Length: 408
Ligand SMILES: Cc1ncc(COP(=O)(O)O)c(C=O)c1O
Image (cartoon, rainbow, N blue to C red; front, side, top):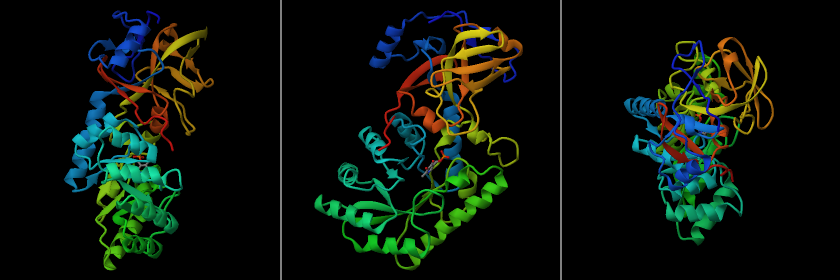
């Protein structure tokens, strides 16, 4: 570790680079031991962290969670935030303490980790299909009977029913609707057919409807987004009423996202929302546009990646130790330096980022730290074992990304 650090100043338009004088002097091995023992509380500062490191601004994170929980409570909507964003059991439990009904999980293996760590009310939003997965689903439901599985296919429903019968349990199923561009049975009559099948089988029961529209969540411009999301979610609501009209109780309609939280929560018949990114935010979400125009800033950017300048090949170029293995993205834009002007990032490979420098940023030195807001939060978090939770400059705790890599 080098002794010089960039301390990023509070104002976005910070005109100069400041360096910290303080250094606690822990060695890399000492920090690793502290992390293993889980006793870092209050002992480390941001300056101590080996890079690249994933950081969480706790004040911003807590404010994001409180804001979403309050907003949905005031509108009498449930809240089952999506765990695919954080993949962290501690965060899932934090959200439940803040009022969430449980946690969504994208994959079975993610759900297994959350359940093992004491997360209740899990809704797996991707169908669980095939001989490798179904026995695991049954094992999970045996131990955690409140787990809900999404289905969009009759043969899969039969397979789940048969496996549940062999284990002498009943599985909760949600009919997954094709209102986006991923999975799901078409809304209306095809969905009703699947609900009827579920009702007719002894070892599965209908929990409700799963309805997520990816295209709606990232539609740029509030009015456009509202139109796309309402079109999608109204089909889900009509399908819910269709079930009820045919005597099939459907108490749950779960869907929505960070981008549509203030749209879907106004739609009668949507019982709960499943946003994920709002806890962290990212550049992709900032650019979709807020209700009053400008950037979407209803929630603060609490997630960053801390990097170190490891090379200064020219006056106006610095290389940091964060490339594609530090920021994963499918977006056509790059990380943005937090609170430091005159820095333009470009990908320089798996391990490196190139910074083109202007103005005061030219004073960056080897060993200085530069912190970046990520283009896309979910896949970036999945690159790290831990997230360091900061209160100001102090590391208050570190949470394990327990479901990191759990994509099966
Ligand atoms: C099924 C489902 N629900 C909810 C979400 C949450 O979306 P966001 O992170 O945009 O809030 C996602 C994200 O991809 C999703 O796949």
